[in-house]
Image (spheres, rainbow, N blue to C red):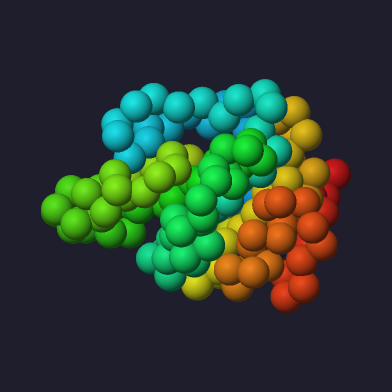
Length: 174
């Protein structure tokens, strides 16, 4: 009976370790494809990522949103639209009253579309660094590479196709 108890303990330990390691990987995930992403924008319009999208700019905090605003709100041309780039923001950590009273009115003033995940259902597992933007490069709906960008200059260069200094690139694992 003692051997069965030890064997059961080892099996249970192995299963728990496997679940925990899978959970850890999921907590720092980047989507591999974007064809199932459906959100609403700051004007409450439903949006799906189109087939011709080239970039997703993901922000998970206020500083990241400010980086995007600083980079693109003052440009005379529609840099995001011209380069098939879409901004995705996770607002799930903000209190609902704050989102409705302050965040949404500010977002509605922006000259570009922002896709909003207000519940975290789609982006809670997406990796982000505070104060930075995760730039996902797309071909079709497939993510081909991911960069973490923390400066307006590097972000503008990355979206317009130039090589950006001050950013790090990851290639999704197969």
